[in-house]
Image 1: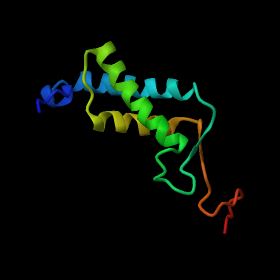
Image 2: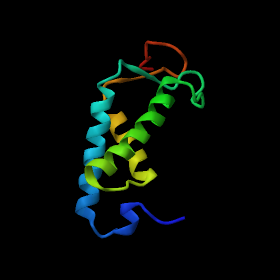
Image 3: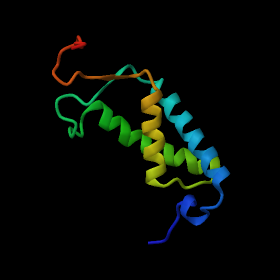
Image 4: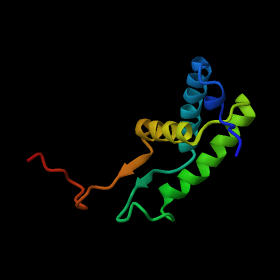
Length: 108
């Protein structure tokens, strides 16, 4: 298997890696805007048919294609994953279930 990830082929080009990662994070944020609110992990976080998990798979593939088409850059799976979850953390599109199912959090 040939190495093809740009980060691995040119690790010293830090400015390019940072620019691509910033753009990928922005790319994910824009894609999230296309969806209604998405519930993070229901009763089973390993339910691969859950909306969040399906969204993850689709957006990772699209982001990899976008990156190659726009930047002529092959992002590593780790870069894509990190940028995706940074965008999830910044987005207001994701709703987190309460661990006990209670919609009201107790201060005590």
